[in-house]
Image 1 (cartoon, rainbow, N blue to C red):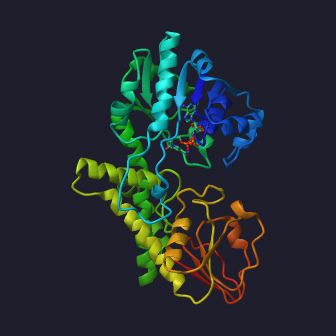
Image 2: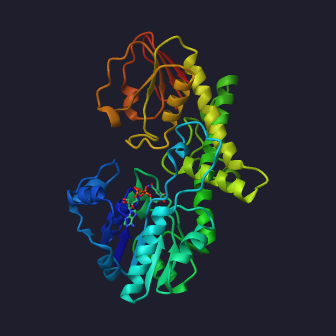
Length: 407
Ligand SMILES: NC(=O)c1ccc[n+]([C@@H]2O[C@H](COP(=O)([O-])OP(=O)(O)OC[C@H]3O[C@@H](n4cnc5c(N)ncnc54)[C@H](O)[C@@H]3O)[C@@H](O)[C@H]2O)c1
């Protein structure tokens, strides 16, 4: 099929490359000259499994909007819906709440709809961007015309493994009010994988997407509450997680049920804060999403307190939000860092994926393993150091005290 991507950012580009791997003819446009220059130079600016190699071999065509519309059977729209920096989850939860910023998505959808009308044919447009429920009806629909057949098809991908998650999802969530458009998309996904396609209304798909993200945050907050209890009572968090993992019928999958740092990344914290905004807007009886973010913050404060208990220089190892990536957006390590600074503690951070592979010469320090990078398990800590390990994978070593949380 001929597939168009309007927006070739962190989500759009790896998905475009993945669609190409399944034999589709893919074209894309992006208003950012930096993004276009990187693609022309076949350069991936961030770590994304398999994407660098795929981009080298790619025949992806960079085009302008009129050609994108003319040449595509349908157009995916993964345009950014950002939150202000204060809502990234690397600082305390602000008192004020806000919805996502839909201005980029609206501007893109307006010009796409105008171009489709100008060309006079009908076109399927598939929004992928994350939005809160009701947004498409309220903000996007008024910008469209009868030529646009609209679907909302958010992806459940994690940064770092975007291509694989696109090629091998558990299911596809498809919000559509046009049966023909839904059928075309089902046909497309049948060429990508055999995962079930769950079809519903656009509003339900909007909510299902953020519900999925916030459920994961909830599991992590829960696991970390258990880890803290274990740490303070002598129970073992991994035994607790292993026991619960057997309760697949009632407790669901064991993923995200291990103790560690808080939830992070470019999606979950900001989605929770946007849902907290929605909770206020709708006057919900209880703002569950605020509680999740406050629990994440308090649990990180506990880690700051543990570190502050040692009269040693403080070092957080790992800046990225998950192992073996250089993406630091929404990272719980960065939240811990800001909470330590707030307490008046000086604290260094070091990450092999953002700062080079050789660690600086550290003095004996109180280290906290903020990201479970494999390299930290090989590190030699200066004698006299204390290493706080929320992941429980750092081996014992002479001269250093290893504190495995919740063990
Ligand atoms: N990155 C992820 O892992 C991920 C996962 C799931 C959902 N999402 C959602 O997908 C959306 C995009 O996220 P992202 O991380 O890829 O953002 P991004 O900022 O990396 O990419 C968006 C791209 O769209 C381009 N763009 C903006 N307006 C345009 C226009 N009018 N025409 C053409 N291109 C335009 C931008 O220049 C940018 O390159 C967001 O709503 C995000 O919440 C992202």
